[in-house]
Image (tube, rainbow, N blue to C red; front, side, top):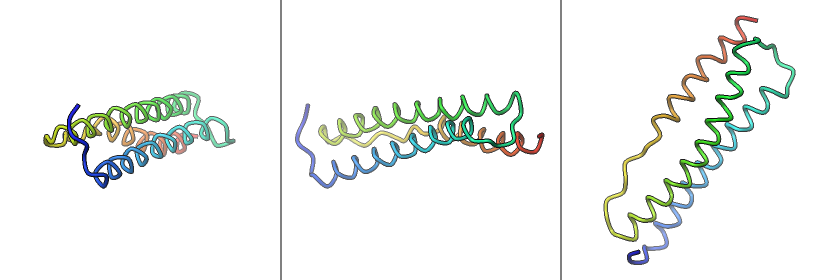
Length: 107
């Protein structure tokens, strides 16, 4: 599978993986909180936001796992690191950021 990379690079990759995992956990917690807490709700937007946050959280967790594997493979093969692939996540968070205030404004 290649040469053993310098430990500092593997540790940096692990820290990035853990940061993505914290982000996934935060998205999941936000979805659960939006469903569980007694906040003003809109009959259509709130369930959509909850599902979107939960799907984003799960997708982020999967993305972090495969991202770490891609980077580790490149480190071991001494090839250039892959480009970041966080575009869909950023788009999803932007959609939530636009819909959430709209959901509260309608109620």
